[in-house]
Image 1 (tube, rainbow, N blue to C red):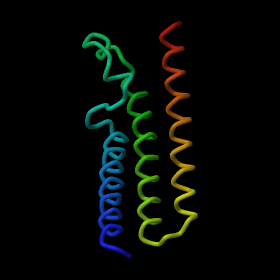
Image 2: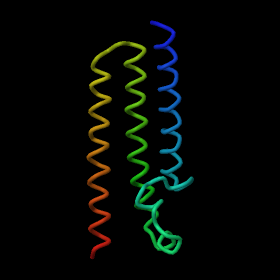
Image 3: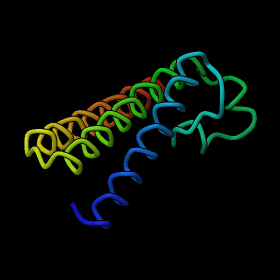
Length: 111
């Protein structure tokens, strides 16, 4: 294992831990809400927004991001191709989930 691989592995572990910590905060409805639908709302709209739904969204999204970075770190340290494939599958699930939730949010605004 080269020094570059070790550094890349350490960076991915740090990113995985940071995103996991943020996801845990979101579980307890703490911390900022870092979802596009919430960030772009005006101050009045933020007061009326369904913060519980936004926290649920960021909990799942950031939890899946943490899982994908953790799998990527395991791949870097072990060179097990199955971990890389699993990381990409988790990212694909994350994108599908985020898109479906965005569509649900927009449909609820139209009603």
